[in-house]
Each structure stands twice: as C-alpha cells, then as structure tokens.
Length: 376
Ligand SMILES: *[C@@H]1O[C@H](CO)[C@@H](O)[C@H](O)[C@H]1NC(C)=O
Ligand SMILES: *[C@@H]1O[C@H](CO)[C@@H](O)[C@H](O)[C@H]1NC(C)=O
Ligand SMILES: *[C@@H]1O[C@H](CO)[C@@H](O)[C@H](O)[C@H]1NC(C)=O
Ligand SMILES: *[C@@H]1O[C@H](CO)[C@@H](O)[C@H](O)[C@H]1NC(C)=O
Ligand SMILES: *[C@@H]1O[C@H](CO)[C@@H](O)[C@H](O)[C@H]1NC(C)=O
Ligand SMILES: *[C@@H]1O[C@H](CO)[C@@H](O)[C@H](O)[C@H]1NC(C)=O
Ligand SMILES: *[C@@H]1O[C@H](CO)[C@@H](O)[C@H](O)[C@H]1NC(C)=O
Ligand SMILES: *[C@@H]1O[C@H](CO)[C@@H](O)[C@H](O)[C@H]1NC(C)=O
Image 1 (cartoon, rainbow, N blue to C red):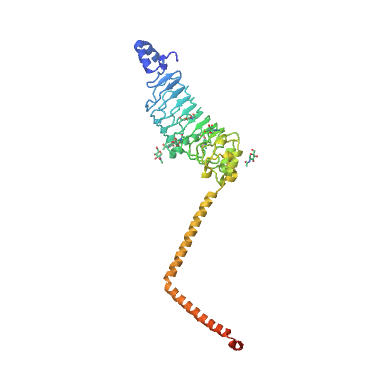
Image 2: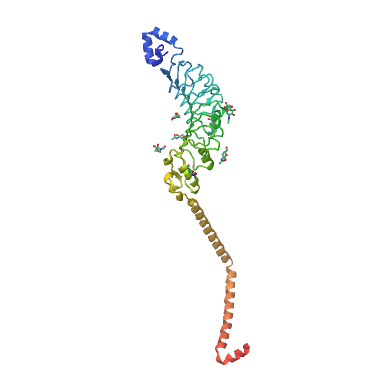
C-alpha cells in the first residue's frame, strides 16, 4: 500500500511540484489509494499527523491503513458517531490532546475496533457517553490528564468508567484535574487496571472500597492534598501488598495525631518515595523529612499555647472590668463612704477616749484597789 501511494509520504509542497511534472502518475496513485492523505495532514507509513491546524472537525477521509492518528492542538469541541465515518481496523493510537473537547457522544469510537491508546488530555470535557466505546473495547491506556472543565463535571465525565466495557484498560491517567475524591464505584468495573495516576488532583482522601477490584500495581498520589492517612485509607492501601504508591508533595500535618500515619508510612513496603515525604505543618517542622522525624517532636502544643494565651488575656480583661466596677461603686457611694468613715472615726475616738480613761484609772495606784473592788 505504501509503495502504491507515494503521495501519502510527502508534504503538500512536494506533491504540488511532483504533480506539475507527472500529473498522470499522481492521478493514478491517488485513485489507487483507498483514501489519500487529507489536506492539512502529514502522512508517513501508517502515521497521520494533523496537528495545530485549527481544525474544528476530523478530516473526512483518512488512509485506511492508519495506525496512529494525531489530531492534537486543534479546536475540535465534540466527537460522535459521524466524526470518524471510515472504519479504520488497524488504528491503535488516537491523540486528541489540546483541543476544546466538551462532549464525547455515543458510538464515537465505534469505527476503531482495535483502539488501544486514547489521549484526551488538555480538554474541557463535560460529558462522555456510556456508549462512546464499543462493547468489546480493546482500550488499554486512557489519558484524561487536565481534561475536565471543572470539578462539577467530574461525576459525568467519570460515569462512563462504571459501565463495564473497558475490561482491558490497564492504565488510566487522571492527573491535573481538581477531583478532590474519586467517586465510589468508578474503578469497580475496570478489572484490568494496573496503573492509576492521580497526581496533582487535589485528592483529600480515598474512600473505603475504591481499590478493591482493580489489580492495581502502581498508584501515583503525588502533589495532592493529603494531610494524614486515616485508618481506612491505610487498610485500603494494605489490601494490595504489591501495590507501589507515590505520595510526595502532600501537605502532611505533623501534629500529635500524626503518629499513627507516621508509623504506617515508615513500616510500609509500598511507599516508593518515602524519603521525599516532608511535613507542611506545623511551621517548626516544615520541610522536615518524615523518614528522620522523631515521633517525640509530634506535638499539639502550639494550639494549646494559643488557647492558654487567649484565656490569660480574657482573665486579665475580666479582672480589669471588675476593678473598674469596684472603683465606680466607690465613687458613686463617696458621700455614704465619707459619712461611714466619719462615723467610724468618731466611734474610734469614743472608744479610745474610754480606753484612755480606764487606762488612766488603772495606772493610778491610789485607785487600783478601788478598781479591783469594783471589778468584783
Ligand atoms: C451525560 O451522559 C450521560 C450518559 O450518556 C447522559 O445520560 C446524560 O444525560 C449526559 N448529561 C448531559 C448533561 O449531557
Ligand atoms: C497524558 O498526557 C499528558 C499531557 O498531554 C502527558 O504529560 C502524560 O505523560 C500522559 N500520560 C500518559 C500515561 O501517557
Ligand atoms: C463548570 O463547567 C460547566 C461547563 O463548562 C459550567 O456550566 C459550570 O457553570 C461550571 N461550574 C463552575 C462552578 O465553574
Ligand atoms: C459494571 O458493568 C456491568 C455491565 O455493564 C453493570 O451491570 C454493573 O452495574 C457495573 N458496575 C457498577 C459498579 O457500575
Ligand atoms: C495542577 O493542576 C492544575 C489544574 O487542576 C493546573 O492548573 C496546574 O498547572 C497543575 N500543576 C502542575 C504542576 O502541573
Ligand atoms: C472498609 O470496608 C470493608 C468492607 O468493604 C470493611 O470490612 C472495613 O471494616 C472497612 N474499613 C473501615 C475503616 O471502614
Ligand atoms: C510493621 O510491619 C511488620 C512486618 O511487616 C508487622 O508485623 C507489624 O505489625 C507492622 N507494624 C505496624 C504498626 O503496622
Ligand atoms: C525524590 O525527589 C527527587 C527530586 O525531586 C527526584 O529526583 C526523585 O526521583 C524522587 N524519588 C522518588 C523515589 O520518587
């Protein structure tokens, strides 16, 4: 086929030049080619490249023997049943990265029965139909890196993974999407999935049951939002003793509640990049390697100190208020107090005078006997 279609292997400039010289041969060879190389594409052996051409649709006639088709960097926004009208039995690789894809409709890949690798990265997907792939799909690698328009489209975009015709999928790339979590059941029907990339996807936890079915061997969780590993996440990961996990770039919170996670991480044989894990909090332990972190330095003291500080301030304020009220009461009652003080002084004076008088009597030896007699 390649020999019969010399024009397939050349760019348009060459083809024009040749066609001026040998118009008949070109006409003949074009007729012999089931489908010539489309305009704005480059064809060489079984690879067709139509890249960065501002195409908003798939070129209609593609060489029937195409194995790899590159449509990256165009402005295609929707693909469906009529987007690829010719059946390409040999097509194994399809690259649609960097388009403006929003919808992938039913039967979109029906004409590619042997599709093995599909790259949908760097798009703005809102929905992928459950029936986009043929029932006996041979898809092995699916790249959905940076593919979602936003978090709210996640459920719809990932929904098609549940519906059970991607039985041969071994590798799934979901990196650079703001997933936060992986919805329940998304991996349950992916019974061949061995490698899952969730790098930089804002993951905060992995639900119990997520990893039960797929025979996962590699799980990339780098650059997410994990602060610790809950008991159920530890159990989930431990389900697969041969699983290799990457965890660097997560904001580990090295406080008193972290001891459990630290012990699990240190003991685990699954964590590949253990030496790259560092604390993000508290400030004092920032950038501290978990591998050499002393469990005794895991404290919640900072927060306690903060609490104590605020309670001291509060106590001070209350005391000051009581003091002010006391002074106010004193001031308002100043007349009463003055009167009371005069009364007190007078009472004292009377008393003192009485005492003085008795003292004088007692100290007069002439009156001593008298006073003793009078006491009796
Ligand atoms: C998304 O796709 C599913 C499955 O094909 C379909 O049921 C649903 O109506 C679609 N949602 C939108 C908003 O297009
Ligand atoms: C997916 O696509 C991104 C960007 O196009 C690329 O960096 C990444 O290596 C791809 N992933 C896989 C598993 O091929
Ligand atoms: C998410 O994207 C969809 C489609 O682009 C849009 O309708 C919706 O408003 C977006 N939601 C947010 C929160 O940005
Ligand atoms: C898995 O796929 C089968 C067949 O399509 C379907 O009946 C089943 O509900 C799917 N499982 C989940 C968890 O969606
Ligand atoms: C991480 O993902 C966000 C989108 O969720 C993207 O904007 C950002 O560039 C990604 N960071 C890296 C280092 O790829
Ligand atoms: C997780 O689920 C399994 C069963 O699916 C259950 O046995 C286990 O106790 C659960 N673990 C936690 C921590 O919830
Ligand atoms: C650490 O690993 C050993 C052997 O794998 C195991 O016996 C032990 O229970 C583990 N300790 C913890 C705390 O998980
Ligand atoms: C640890 O980080 C360094 C620097 O970022 C990197 O080169 C190395 O591959 C990482 N180690 C592992 C096991 O991922």
